[in-house]
Length: 286
Picture 1 (tube, one colour):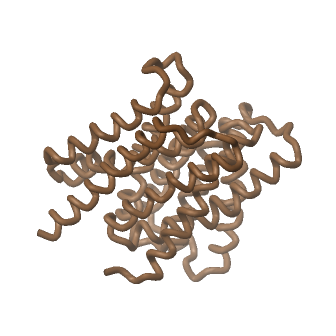
Picture 2 (cartoon, helix red, strand yellow):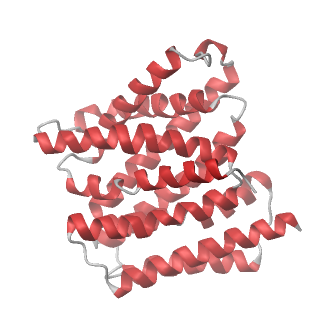
Picture 3 (cartoon, helix red, strand yellow):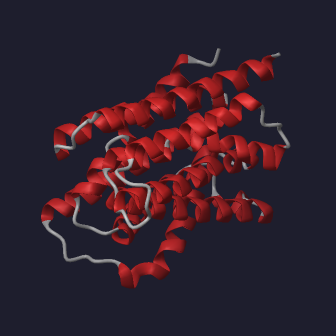
C-alpha cells in the first residue's frame, strides 16, 4: 500500500484539474491563447523553482534532453486537442472523452511493453467507445459534439502516453521533468502565436491566470509526482474522480444539464476503465 500522502497528492491534483473544462469553456480565449498563457505562467514559475533548486538543468544529459523534448511535444498536442474538444463539444463530454485514456493505455502497454491484451480488456475498450457513442446526439462528424468527442479521444490517447514517458525519464527529478514538460510544450505552441487572440476582457485574463497557476503549476506538478511514484492502479482509479467533479462544476457554473445519456455514457466509461485497471493489477500480482 503506497503512502497516504501520495494518494492525497493525486486527489488534490485531480480536484484542481477538474476546474479546467469549465474555465476553458467559459473564457472567450481560443485554444492557442489558452495554451500559450498557461504555459508562459507555468514555465516561468517552474523555471524560478529550478533556478533556486539543487536539481539544476546543467546536470541533464543529452539523451535526457531528448526525453524532455518528447514529453513536451506530446503534452502540447494533448492540450491543444483537449481545449479544442471542450470548445467543440461541452465541458462534461470532453472531460469524459479524455477519461478513456485508461483503456487506451492498454494499447500503449501492448505496443511498448508487449503486454498482451486479454478479452476482458478488449470488452472494456468497446464499453468506453460505447459510452462515448451514447452521449452524442448523432454519429456524424458534421455534428460539433461528435467531432469534439473524436478530438477528445485523440487527446486521451496522448494523455495515456505521458505516464510512460515520465517513467522512462524517472532518473530526472519531478521538478526537472515538470520544467521540461512545460518549457518544451511552450516551444511547440509559439509557432501558433499568430492564431492567438489577446483582445480579452478582465474576466478572461483572470480565468487564464487561474488556469495557469492553479490548474497548471499546482495541479500538473502534483500529478507528475503522483503518476511517477504511485502504481498505475491507484492513479488510474483516482483520475476518474475528475468526471463527477467536472459534471458538478459544469452544472453549477455553466448551467450544463446532467442528462440521463451523459450519466449513462460516463458510467460506462468510468466503470469499464476502473474494472480493467483492477483486473490488470490483480493479474500483475498473480
